[in-house]
Image (cartoon, rainbow, N blue to C red):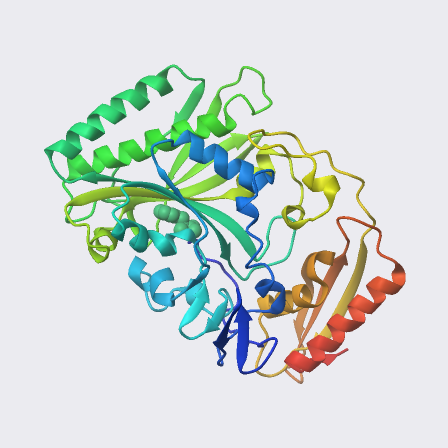
Length: 427
Ligand code: PHE
């Protein structure tokens, strides 16, 4: 999970009831950490990635068909313990991803997973040696065309025995994948498998770790070719894939993969050689594994030319009827409806207020009718030391024209909820 910047202090507001919250037809006690809003609670049962004619479902199936010998897992509950999401994976106690400002908590003991890596230990513990797991994941973040608090990831992993048989399996598989890639129209910018800043783990034989890292790279280069090859829109130009050193608490060495598409480098996924601790906790010692995690929306937006991440949630037939299982097609936008900008300025209460709390409140009140929300002014009065902020909300529906009365009334609701929930003083 990449680190996200910004203010770390967060306040929470529990909905719909102060003592209990209902999620996926079960009731959970709330506490001072509860910050799952009703807008988020409604998303838990949507399972977009399981719909065969939805771009996310089409992409999931496409990746699964590229790894035919892997077990495809799905349908796992998004409610996990912080231990599963963070501790088991070696996240330090002060990692920013744990903050209330960045993650959704049902209560102190339960949260919405922020990444599919939260299931690594469980899946390894089941004895799966080649697997893919797709799921919805939840992160508190800004509101714009490429950020949505719910999105989808796919985790993939392959386990090799830490033995001569494992080395033989790796050498054989690496030779096969290399031969396939050598005949393909792909140019790869590589980084060393291992380096002082991206080392093998102390318990690993460096030669073996290098072979596992090479297998990871070859497997993902071949996936990139299957997804993007011949689609860069540049005629005979080869597909360009770039490997970059990265850091994750649960892999070493770690990498990020980028693809050059329509003139830009796009970050596609994170991956690495799984920390031995994960396999030990899962009770599969004497094995070495690689793992990757990719964001389905990011890739689907590129492949299907989908301009706004909210569209994935649309129930409008003009969106849904455009897609066919098994096919990557170019989305034909229906007319864009007019947008309406409205500002809200207020004095921040002395306890402070996190941007993500404002964003979540807007989503909770107006749902997907907010296209983006931007902080456009932030100043502290030199005499009183009070801070004033102004946010600009862009109201626009994906499916219809909003009337003036409707946007006015949405905005009135937002302003009054800001006053009630955060005790801000409107200016
Ligand atoms: N879980 C990481 C993320 O969400 C991605 C990742 C998965 C990295 C597996 C390494 C191995 O950013």
